[in-house]
Length: 339
Ligand SMILES: NC(=O)c1ccc[n+]([C@@H]2O[C@H](COP(=O)([O-])OP(=O)(O)OC[C@H]3O[C@@H](n4cnc5c(N)ncnc54)[C@H](OP(=O)(O)O)[C@@H]3O)[C@@H](O)[C@H]2O)c1
Image 1 (cartoon, rainbow, N blue to C red):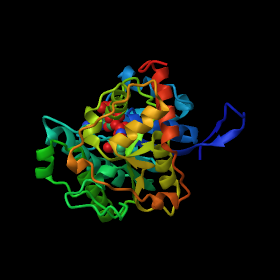
Image 2: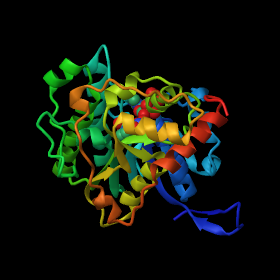
Image 3: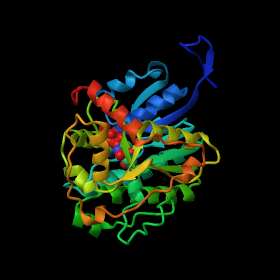
């Protein structure tokens, strides 16, 4: 085990890892890298272009980054691209995946990078004899999008799988859910065949401070809502919400806890857009939160999530107040919304 001098205490501390985080410059992955570094891990992050300063500068500013962060170039669409980053790691956190609903080329730009990209990462994992566990970021979109009716009395849990298909996606022009569902299914099949210790985390809509300079699709959607736009949240309808730090911490928890196995839903509260807007308008009366949303019938169906599997590992979720307070404070600090 490697030891380094802690700047804070002057004592020697053990360095954990190394672990690989794919898509390290993304909204969630940046927060995960921050959490891993602060927990003492050596992190190898993959990005498509390590030379793109605008995309990676925030990572180099993280505490511990100069000593324990390495950035390596890798692309989901290039076979073997992750071999170098993953070789020698004890853990892999695979978060990279296209986060876009609408696309002019759903197969090439959404489905292939998500599904074949995940298999590409897992093939690199298979080549690594030191690997202990892989954690993949799936999504509650791989659980909650159902063509059949959801019984409102039965809370959705890890046994539920979205049953979207190509026809459904073509009709609604939304491919994200299919990409996450098929990618997770493919990952489970590959892991079983190749005896890889895999755990998946399925976050709902992630809310929190954004570390990257440019806002991700999710962070931009929240900002648009806080500025009075209703289009995206009309479409979203009923959704679960979860704090970004909770999502990062849950990834590390299921990596470190030997008893963790299978899928883990990661979500704090489920609200429809009208409930969300009325909560936001009450708590932040100075923001122009929209009042009306035209929610498509299928997106307004009532459901709740049962997250007891993650809670049984000792996990506690932050509430809506804390997650939005942190998110709004950081958007103000970054100059996206006025004080
Ligand atoms: N945001 C949410 O509310 C939410 C909820 C549930 C699950 N998730 C999952 O969480 C993960 C991270 O999402 P996010 O919200 O943080 O989105 P994000 O900021 O857009 O991050 C996605 C990352 O994937 C990378 N990526 C996309 N295509 C790639 C390719 N062909 N090769 C290599 N890297 C590629 C992106 O790299 P570039 O920066 O180079 O584009 C980016 O770093 C995704 O798996 C997403 O499905 C997100």
